Image (cartoon, rainbow, N blue to C red; front, side):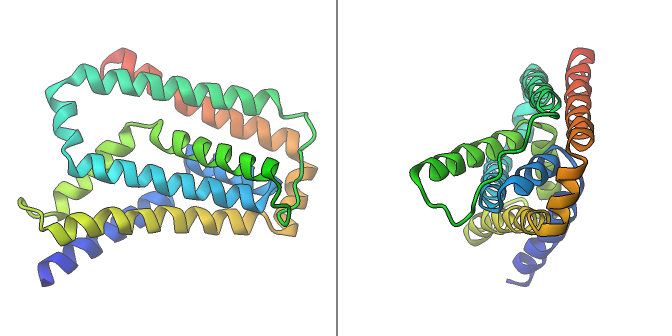
Length: 214
């Protein structure tokens, strides 16, 4: 029981540090939250769902599959990079467009539909970087025993879902408050171009890495 607890705590600590590292997911949640707190929280939930997908895939041996079929990893990396470039282009192109502010108290079907789309966008953004799957698998390999007990196999994905969702929910709540929102609206064009550029560069890096075969 002690070994199981230590393994779970080790994975939780490593994944918390990883979740807090800036990247495409942070950019997406931050930009969404300043327009709508509820959409920001929906995006955070999508990030948690993406983390859950990676956790289950890593436990199922995704890293072993990548090692056995290197072309699979390169193909996924290329598609993921292309998706990030697309997101970056959309953010850059809309830099000068007014931000559509929403009332979070509005529970209309339209707002609910927006929440679903934002959730799916968060999920897609999270899973678009296959390197994250390798990081998950590496952390699991470092902390999990060779034969994973059922209780640990069930606890690890749940803990990772809570970490990913919790961190990005904090980001959404912080950046949807009055002061950060006002600052964003004041410098929206510059911030969006910077965010779109960062997203696009991350995508280009992934695509270039796939083309080089590493």
